[in-house]
Length: 321
Image 1 (cartoon, one colour):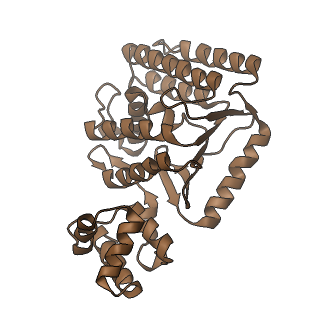
Image 2: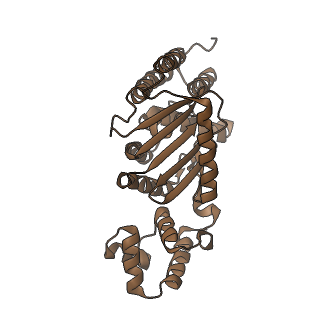
Image 3: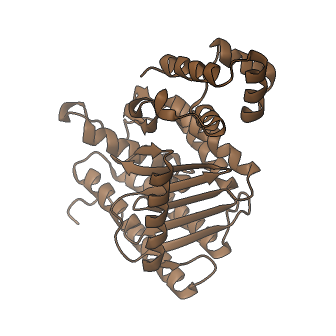
């Protein structure tokens, strides 16, 4: 379903719900925290309602989302099909939603992950580039694959990743449950691309430096129990069992969103309450098999980061090793 069609279906639903124009305008101003002129631009169709505008309106007015949104239109984030086709709008909408966390003293972001958490590695353009590089390698035909050095990420996307990194530091509570093989699996991937000559010795030296810096940053969070950017509390768990994929749940005000990672960098996103509850229950159950390393388990924490640094330090350009 095209965005314009979704927009029109929403307008139709609003007019049925609140037939009086002035009352509808006042209601939307209150729900969306917008001035009258901004609401009017959306009602005229000059500006589209964002995804999170739609979610807020539907929740406050008790509208059924399925009446005007299909699963294909908004729920599945096909983040990047190739380097020329990136769905900027969906990510922009999600960043707008995340920014609301600043105003909610009970906002919560919880991520169970077998990859480096995006809210951490978006600090480093090289790591973000690597995940996108891996994605394009897997999807492209052999003759169209490119080396890591030749692969580039649009500046617009890098800027959004920086914004996302900054905004996710404002949640009242953040929890990471990390697969104990998270770094090991990444190193395996890097070695593979080196072995087929898509990454050279310079690439490995640079990504090694970046990963060591990331481990320093992550260890400081674990040691202090908070983000250094904002001072907001963080819990980091290291899971003793392998995680099959990434599960994330986000709560801001009375909005609940859950995610499942798919195809390396894509996510399937849902606002369904039952899905949120199931994912939250699953993620919380993983804590039973995990060790908390923020401001606790000092010996375990030190040993964990020492092992990760040894893995990273083993990156080199010798394909025979």
